[in-house]
Length: 183
Image (cartoon, rainbow, N blue to C red; front, top):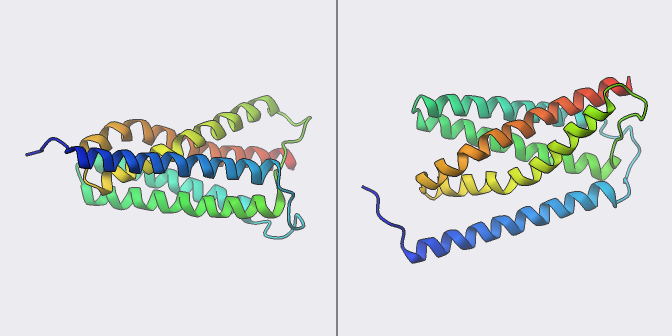
């Protein structure tokens, strides 16, 4: 039996969601500053493996998301939870590696005369915009799950999963396209 949420639990959820939105906005602003304003700190050869690691972590997050979706469709709740926590861990490790890479190297540009540049830029723009949208959704979805608010979790997870999956997959695709264009 479910009970109606009390005003205290609603206000607690509201405060948590406000905090999630503020953290997400701060993280997005920090990344914008790091990528577009902050000068690179090191030579381009230092930690050159980070972009490949980022792509691997994004790919692993995508696989974990698909596994988690399969488990929830089969009503295997504990396995679903483990897969989704794995996806969250992979995405978190990606974010740490991504920040380190951009701190050290700054932004990497797609060659101006390379093939598929317009498609790459469109894909990258959609990736960045949807990653910004996905972050608070991911955190809110986890908040609802971890606090036992399963109906709210289900409602928002319907939006979170496809966005998170798109961002994870396009992260890998943009990496591959950039590497191929650079030769």
